[in-house]
Amino acid sequence: MLTLNYRYRIYPDATQEQVLIEWMEICRGAYNYALREIKDWCDSRKCSIDRCSLEKEYILPTSSPFPTEVNQLNNLPKAKKEFPKLSEVPSQVLQQAIKQLHTAWEYFQVRGFGFPRFKKYGQFKSLLFPQFKENPVTNLHIKLPKLGAVPINLHRPIPDGFVVKQVRILRKADRWYALVNIQCDVNVPNPIPCGHPIGVDVGLSNFSATSDGVIVKPPKFFKSLQGKLKLLQRRLSRKLDRSKNYEKQRIKVARCHHQIDNTRKNFHFKQAHALCDAGDLIFMEDLDYRIMAKGMLGKSMLDGGFGQFRTIVKHVCWKRGKFFGEVDARGTSQECPNCGGEVKKDLSIRIHDCPHCFYQTDRDIASGEVIRNRGLALISTAGLAGKETAYADKLPGIDVKNQSRQGSKSRKRTTRKAS
Image 1: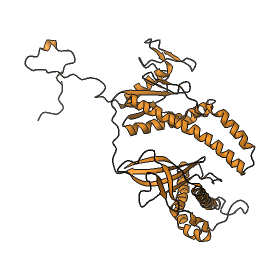
Image 2 (image 1 turned 135 degrees about the vertical axis):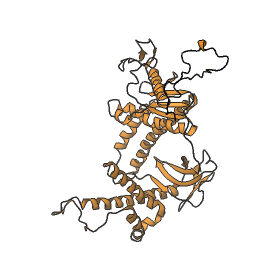
Image 3 (image 1 turned 90 degrees about the horizontal axis):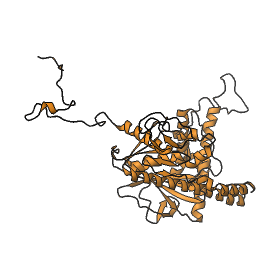
Image 4 (image 1 turned 90 degrees about the vertical axis):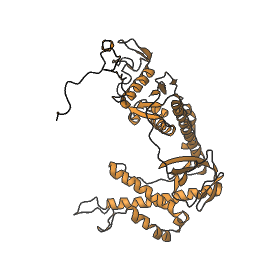
């Protein structure tokens, strides 16, 4: 089963936009109410058996069951009678808000940390429509239940053979998007490692350096708009909270963040496609960039978005049938790609000069070549490591004296006993 997500820009009118915002607030209220039930049940069982706090912990009957996903979904029809506002939202969209909470709860149970939090005003920014009777997407509109047809910019058509499974309406700043989930019943085989290999080294001085000698300078997405963002945030801090001017200024700040995010993601996709155009096997380092972002160069690390770039390269390689692999990152800049010897150098030295084999090149390019060599070592096998030569021994016309030492030799022992 092949599943893809296409994101399109939609343009709801003023009435539709207000309805979507109201739906998000209603779903946020249902989410917070369901989370409150879970917290009350947990708080009622925190105290000891022989005593109970009357100030900070709720007292619930010991026979009350845990508010599971099924129980809370079954209570929605009763809640609609008590709160008629819930009936304005499509029933499946409201159910997805409860399911989203229990997905976070199950994730917390597995990890042991990250308890679900209450959603503040404006933090619930998406609505999920999980089911459709027919294809809701046309060339000009997308049809949503209880909302009608919303204009859509279908910049790329949905491929033939794919079926629309669900649609998520997303709000970013003052813009609206539709994330269309499509599926097709086909099996896509994994790409076979063959062709021209490329090792990619990412860093701060150079955004990326490949083993082919291609160096890309970092464009500095956040730093280029940092002055403008600082001015907008200063003006926002002087507005009265929840006023109309505050909301206008908040949208300007969100729009600036959205511009930075779109610019960075567009650059990452272009570089990923450029790598796939240049080679057939792409290798990158297996690094945890979240740890590196906590140092004194954290702002520059986050500005580069190296984790997102690696994820995008992996997706583009899968989409275009290229092989992608991750290699061990330890010592890639301290190893010679030509002879494999150890060459110690600190960050101030930008030229790789090997004292063993006298191989000299740029430091980042040398790291890319080491990554390429390690990637090839991971996918290589014993049969593909070298060349094998076949010799026609004991055939008429073959001179035994002219054969090399690599010729076939008779076995001195037998593999099984003679009968």
